[in-house]
Image 1: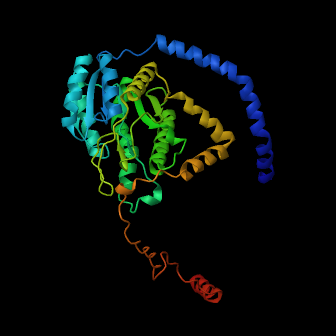
Image 2 (image 1 turned 45 degrees about the horizontal axis):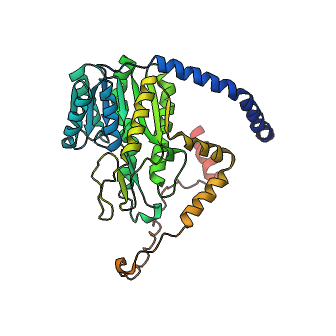
Image 3 (image 1 turned 60 degrees about the vertical axis):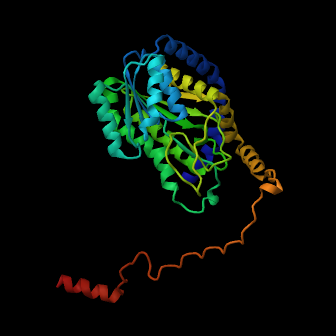
Length: 362
């Protein structure tokens, strides 16, 4: 019966939903426009409020700090290497920021997150916005990794680097009816080739915050900002270090700069959306068209990615080529375990089980 019901629902629900959406779309668009106007007229005044920014030494984090500085907010700048924050602090003060506190902390460590939130509360007495901009990208296919040393670090920075600060700050954000601002990416729902782990981590981040949004209700606002490719180059290195973390991969270590104009526009939209109370901020917004393809024509995206991956890159000049080494022998697969991983008690014969039961009854 359940199979028949599901089969009927599969046939009825999709077309019925499309018809309902077609009729409701004009009304929804009108309501969204009215909501945007109301939020624009009642934008949050950040004067003298406290904003904590993780990954503030990154290009995105720095520009977001400047946008809050223009709104006369007090800033708490957090990064692993605090010496990179001193110049940002002076620039933020020149743009109009109130007091600016610099804290060296690693957001993938829960104790550091508790400390930086505690220092913020001790210094300012409140916390109004938590902005998580920490992020770590990569530019390699999954099988090109060679080993898995960097895998946990990628997940730690992109996922736990958002969760731990939020967990530590949430009680104080409830008290001030504050807001969490999340720096995500379009790769969370539009998986791009050569970014498998990054896409998975960003998808986990968005799902975490979308679930948390319902748990905290109206007490704490959550703004999820997603950006597409906003500049930079990833061809010369294996990692894109947005938060300045020290990371090595096959002997390569570099920080990939992002294009200034695009990052500034993205930061401006993030802060404006957060102050309006927007649940989602997208830059650029034309990426949303791929949601339609993913829902109704996923094969189109698959064909596009296959075409991109199959396009051969131009060969380097002969002078720049390196002699190829002899191909290494493939590593042998690990031998199966000598004993089973799970051991079960031997089954007893029915006759012996009956005898034991009779003995117990006697």
